[in-house]
Amino acid sequence: MLLWFWLVTGEKKPGSMSEFWLISAPGDKENLQALERMNTVTSKSNLSYNTKFMIPDFKVGTLDSLVGLSDELGKLDAFAESLIRRMAQSVVEVMEDAKGMAQENLLANGGLKEKMKCLKIDLTSFVTHFEWDMAKYPAKQPLVSVVDTVAKQLAQIETDLKSRMVSYNTLKTNLENLERKSMGNLFTRTLSDIVSKEDFVLDSEYLITLLVIVPKQSYTQWQKTYESLSDMVVPRSTKLIAEDNEGGLFTVTLFRKVIDDFKTKAKENKFTVREYYYDEKEIKREREEMSRLLSDKKQQYQTSCVALKKGSSTFRDHKVKVTPLGSPDRPAAGQSDRERESEGEGEGPLLRWLKVNFSEAFIAWIHIKALRVFVESVLRYGLPVNFQAVLLQPKKSSTKRLREVLNSVFRHLDQVAAASILDVGTRSRNSRVSTVRSASLPGRDCPGTVLGRLL
Figure 1 (cartoon, rainbow, N blue to C red):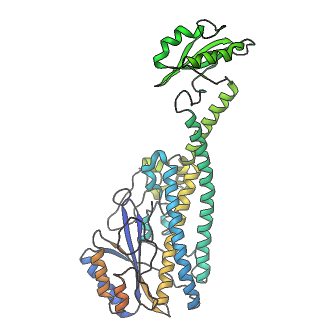
Figure 2 (figure 1 turned 45 degrees about the vertical axis):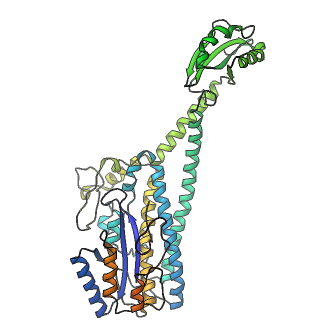
Figure 3 (figure 1 turned 90 degrees about the vertical axis):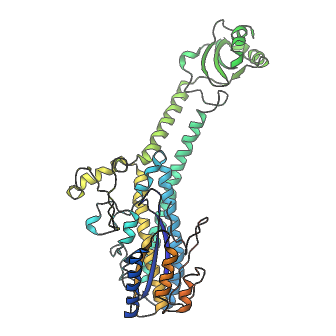
């Protein structure tokens, strides 16, 4: 059985993709020797990096229930992949001022051994060092119950994601609407950040100050004619308070009873009276609302000081890539819990939630893949349960040769099924080796089927 999936890992460079194949073969002596031959050939030819993919023995139940689980796990796999993509995209959206740091926040923390839970585990390391989480998904429970636990966990994460992103997007939309008001030309933009109390005659029973937009080429004409556009215009009362590429905003003071006449004469001279009445309380409210929305939006992510200040240590041969929390000069093992927790204080609640739950969803997704390998292997190889799963990470440009090696090494299992490795459109219940399919990503011509890709 062969299963493909992709990850965007940033291992070699930000956004780089890693391809993984999960295969399983019967656990008898002949096929274990075949796995050894495969490992020897792929290692010598530098075709792939291979590791055992350990899956616990589950309570199988009936074959009928396994057939139902096979279909359910296929749908759950696609749902988990979709959820992870949305969460990754949400991280990018929330970190809009630091999008280049988003990849560093997409991790699988707490997924390896207990002693490593204080470290930041990158996605590739989690996959290549996968261990079943017995505490979260007890293998002693019926297989149906384990799948149900994973499904409920992902459903709850999706519900929370929708709720939190709706709130964030509402906040973002309100802020954009306010920002849009402060943009544009003098005819449309808000004037609350331009005018001041000193520009107006206020609280007068007879006098009023109007705002007039004058084309740039008509500045001289305005200065010469504004006092004669109507009776009762206060002499020398005009002042330029703002301008853009098209024109300027002038004040003019006149008696209230000639407003309509002044507007008519101004229009005839291609001067536009902007309807605006100074309200200090409204201006204060608008400015406070803008400040509040800016603050609230920023506080939703407040980019982690860990991501901004730290690099990551990468070890060769697919050893775990980690970034110790805390001071760069102090080993992670020497930190107290309080020191480690304080590193997260620079993060806003939404980014913190996305990081934690992205990790949870990703870990659940890889467990789903382990469940799929188990169920499909039992259906193909029969009972009692006896198979070995192996994770392959093909080297670049070696996938075609790797498929040929697999086809050759495991041809003895079933000639038809072995051939189906080269035909990813084939899936047969009667085959001993076959591919587990999922929808391929649009616009990407890759070997096999793509079961997972982040970002």
